[in-house]
Length: 261
Image (cartoon, rainbow, N blue to C red; front, side, top):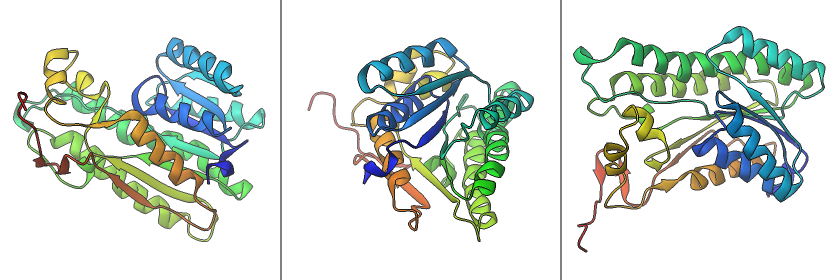
């Protein structure tokens, strides 16, 4: 099925690490061409070099903060002028900050999450979708979260942003009715990436503890699902795909094994 991806052009935001970098690797191994965007340009350039060496992949890199609407619009304009409008857009850029109760939360953390997870996704989608509609083909895949289904203690604003992603997935899907454009989301549970380290502002000990005692998803696991969703036949839209590690059954039910067992 992934043969359908050969030669397609895939734009991945937040591609410098975690699910974004794994998604780039998955698409490259299927013969896709890549547009990689992230704030950490040196990281995606290093990734691009590896993918060119391993697969002969055509890769274009752009240092980009999805919160910067003028820069997002300028870049997509450049892509259009160069004939590089993506066939597939993976809106992966996102983050969480803190687990504080709402009355103790840091407003700057709230702003960063809302601006990245919601507004950034909107800015990129708004810039790319008109070109897809005009061309008559395209697929937008959001990386959501089970946090968009169930609120957990301390999640408050992060949960709100992922509920928004779920709503935008549904709304955009309706807006694309009558076109061939597919809108999908892949919504993972616990994935061991830099996510918790970012959430805890670099506290690696606290972040490491999140993933102890069970087997979490890996970034590669989620990337494989994203690739599967993208490779479905054009008449098939895997609209919303929820992915849990087997040890997790919902945000509250997680089987942690005794460290001594």
